[in-house]
Length: 235
Image 1 (tube, helix red, strand yellow):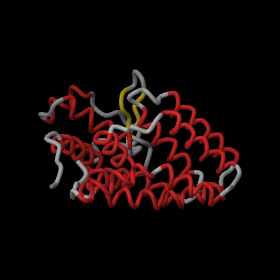
Image 2 (cartoon, rainbow, N blue to C red; image 1 turned 45 degrees about the horizontal axis):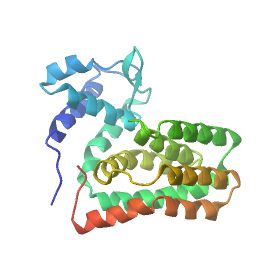
Image 3 (cartoon, rainbow, N blue to C red; image 1 turned 120 degrees about the vertical axis):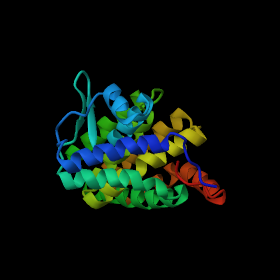
Image 4 (tube, rainbow, N blue to C red; image 1 turned 90 degrees about the vertical axis):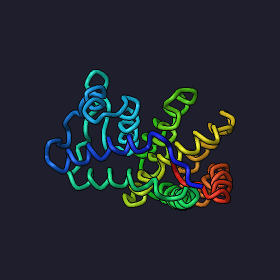
C-alpha cells in the first residue's frame, strides 16, 4: 500500500512554482523568496504547506533562511538549482527500503574516504557539527542537525558525487524514519556513536569507521526491512 500525505500535492505545487520562477528568470540565485503569507495567497494553499516546502528546500540546500531577512535562494548555478528541485520532487516516488539501502552503502564509503582523506579543517567542521547536533538533540532541529553531522563526514571524503547523492536522498529518509518510528535510540547511545565516528576518522581507521557506520544505522536498516515487507513508499 502506498502511503500518501493529504498535503503532499500542495507542498509539491509550491516547489513546482519556485522551480518555474527560477526557470523563467523571475527569480534568481541570491534573491529572497516571497513571504509565506503572500505565497500561500498567490497559490491558494495553506501557510503550513508553504512552510513545509521551504523546509524541504532548506534540507536540500536550495535555500537558506536568515533571521529578519527571510528565505533566500542559494548562490548556485541555475541549472543546478533546477535539477535539485526536480530531484526533491521525484525522490518521493521511490520506496523507502531502497533509499535506505543506497544511503547505507554511500555512508559506509563516505566514512572510509573521510578517514583516509580528511584534513584538519574537515575535523574542525565535523567537531562543530557534532557539538551542534548534541546541543539540539531535544529540539525540533534534531533531525536537521543529525543530517548536518553526516554531511560534514561526507564532505570530508572529498568525493563530491557521494556527498551530492547523500544530500539528495538522506533528508526524506530521516524525516520518514523520525515520523513513523519516533526515534527510540537513547541519547547516550547516539552521542557515543557520533563521537566514536569522529574518533575513528581522526585516527584514520577506515575499517573501524565503516563498521561503526553499519552499527550506527542498524536500527534504520531494520525499520526499512519492515517497511519493505509492507510495501511502503515514501510519503
